[in-house]
Image 1 (spheres, rainbow, N blue to C red):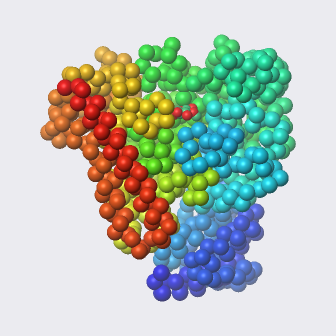
Image 2 (cartoon, rainbow, N blue to C red):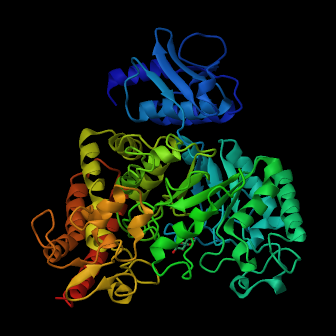
Image 3 (cartoon, rainbow, N blue to C red):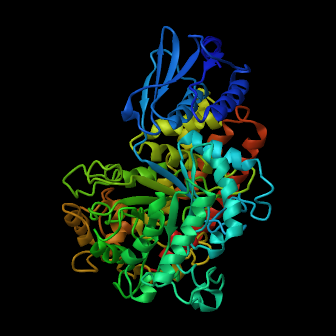
Length: 639
Ligand code: GCW
């Protein structure tokens, strides 16, 4: 740290006047820890002095619940907010200024989150994590409520520092036991810790929970319900009462409980359709139980019942669009970015922009289920950017998904986003050190979907590694191309599903071929044009025509929309076959480059983390080579 810069930091941050907000205690704690670590000073918390950092409430209502203003002037730095939580987020911003070595001159920052609810979804079961690659669950259910792991607080601090304000504690394949009294008492303890950091707790609820174990359908046998009823029919008054009583019980323990996320009639989970009711009937029944307490239902649209359409990719849209306008006002539809399932790349789910009378929130996957688990260094921000910048054209050009989520295109009564967490009890939280970048980037994007990629990336690098210019350059060089190279080498042109059915990691071309997508000696890909499955018609013009035309379709999505002849001419001038085969090498080339780049940082990174990243890169190299060998072998069968 440059001595002049350090001197100004010390000068400004040595004395701090708190605002009297509800978060003062954690704010003081956070400042003490960080200033000690970064500047080796202990700040003095003062009451009247007009120097140093001054925090105070202001009357600017447009700052809302969480916004803040930071300004520097002659008298020092001021942090102002209209509501308590603004001071919490403003404090983390103040810390970031030092962490990223920003100048304190002429600060004129005004921040309000573009989305109100910014959540992590944990796919945690009781101990293990579905699609989790960073160890076991962070929540120690056997120890709670009596024994409290200090990591709960650290987890909350990390989240608050990037703006996350909601946590769904359990898997959407929800074990009904989470709704049992003994578990609610454990959950209340977590809620109490998280509340200190403005984080609300939510639960994934199993629609079949009101049933007694003997009455539950086969799909629920592994769990059994936790109620005493013979049905979960949403029209049944007993069922309605059960949920109402359950909601009352939850709120008596957790007064600021956020609500439920529900996976229903999806992959075997029980739901309203088991009783001839619609998704809206089911969601509304739960919403009415939560309504008196201010809770919401986030109903997932990830459904793909084969009776709806032969083409899986079309099903969710076809099921939900007809229900637009039929949901209660505290229901929000939680929708994955793509219409298939978190593939390495997918065109955006066409429900975005199409539902105009029902709020929609996006569900992104931070955990790298289809993107090399926590073994590969794959930076997901470029993929999320592609999604958020996707122009749906629903209200003319510029109707991007980011603007839909923020309510700029279609009014949204709830503005929210969820990310499936990649955390676990591994010592570095995410398994791969670089997977932390995806957690960080998700939080920052959730706060502001328009935040520049370079800003997010460089701030992550600076706050995780160091502010050295070379480190910054090299690490960014390592990260930025990884999503693209992963797509090229693992699931080219959005072909989707190329991995084994079990594990979603090793190459599974043979098993997927001519099931998930078509291939023969002449062509490869799925025909979703108007003469094919007509998926293209779920999009607004001009996307529909663009995607429908093999010569205009963005090449990134080519095989998702077109059964493409191997000799199709690509923009590069190569044929599809030549380009696809050549690009399969990108995975290996990228990891080779990353190994060299990382080596160039030896001495600039602490030895332990340097070595751990090196090890991850070596495993990635081995595994990406194996993937390449399978891919080449497979594609050479077709010519
Ligand atoms: O991607 C698939 C995963 C399942 C997951 C499901 C879902 C939680 O393979 O593990 O279940 O999606 O999102 O519901």
